[in-house]
Amino acid sequence: MARLAHILLFLCTVVLGLSQGPPSDSLFQRAEALVMEQEYGEACIIYDTLVKRGYRVEEIQKKILYRAHRQIEGRFLEERNAGDRAFQHSQFDAAREAYMRALALKPEDEYSLQQIHEVEAILAKRKQ
Image (cartoon, rainbow, N blue to C red):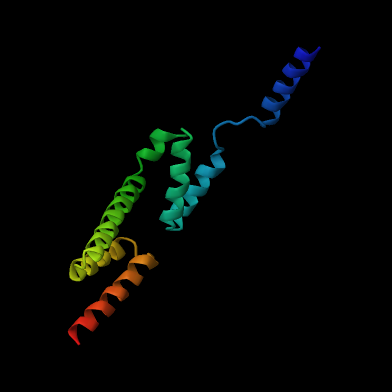
């Protein structure tokens, strides 16, 4: 009797769609809509989620946008980290240049902008 109850519960779960399966097409469609709206960062977050879940990997990975976003994100982090390292070693000109390159790759990055202002304040004090 208990075995029958477990089987019925399993069947109900599958039929009603309550089991953990691949993400729905609607999530992929939402990412596509974001691309059309030129909201590339948000679209790539969804693509990342889909890739991690093993959904339509070949279709997503073929996208030039996806690959480009990953490359830009990597370069951005490298530049920002280079700025941090230069800042820690008091190489303020090099730090400012690295933060500016990071900001060129990701203009909305408040941290890089803040660091540029801090570096410029330090350099201005040194000139006095």
